[in-house]
Image (cartoon, rainbow, N blue to C red; front, side, top):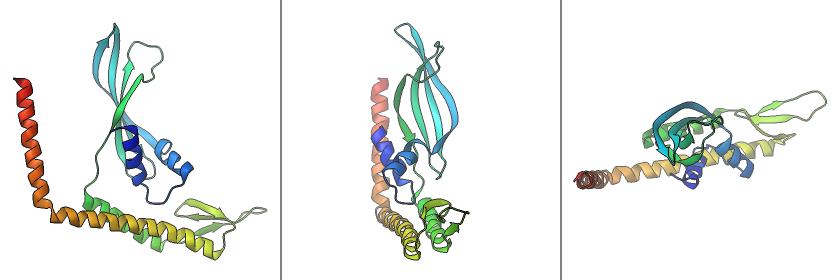
Length: 192
């Protein structure tokens, strides 16, 4: 997958609306490296390289993905030389529905927390996320409703997709069987 495809995918993992800065932080900052591994070595124009896979995990959702790089092996600087792409595996739709349903319930039952500090404005948080200073009751309600509306939209979209899959289950399995047969034929033709 390309960087643009990854951007679309990772932004869909957010359970709340994001503005421009939050989108950039969600995509580039809120993750940690889980593992690094070397998949292969090769020599190119007299220099040794390694193909590496870096496993990353998002810190604010359960998304995991792989990033693929090539790096020079015999350099003092250990950085990656070339970026190739991303790989991720989507969860089964029933897992997504369960998570989104739980998220809607959590949003409905969670209250907005207002913290007061001496000589400072009141600071409001919802589900450990900063939402503003000195907010009125209406502003607090709107912030909570906005997040609940986004979660419900995500849930309804996933639910619609789930039922379309159920309706087309036989034809989808038929297509998968055809694709598998085609892949086998292509591999067989490559070997010959």
